[in-house]
Length: 230
Image (cartoon, rainbow, N blue to C red; front, top):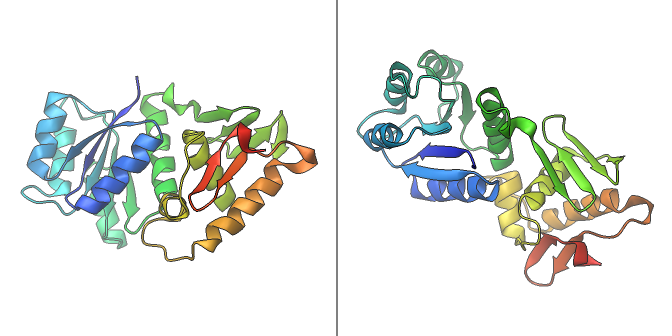
């Protein structure tokens, strides 16, 4: 059964982005738009992890965090605090309220997913295997290693995140804009052709030694991880 994540966020656009990236990574997602709704949702069905915005209507994220920690059913549930407040004093306050980790807006979806997986490894070791495989390619997310046919593939950080994202939904075509949002983040302004440059680097690394191309370019649409690429 896929880990269930409760996302507590009152910004509709950000909530949709979080849902998209989490579901693309294989997680089940439930939503809450304010603090009261979050407490009710967790009481009905305890999530495996909570992504909790600091600034919420009705009940603040800090107070929701405190109440989760006082409740027997959620006291051990990992909580990732998501907020625009980046001062050290704010982070300390979040941790003192019971948060396990802290991500400051704007953020990279790739980084967020990595932190979610890291938190889940502590409570659900089976989830923490953190390995993805497609054809003869394998990613070990915990060790940040990629192999193809058993041989090590050396990737830069951005190429690693690109491959990670594509391997979560092999065969699916992603536009350049979708890849920018997922890998670089929605608030990072880079040109679309930046995606093309990193795809070329990823291809070069994966296809070294004359291996078959596994990245399919779809004209006017984008890219997909697909063994039929060649």
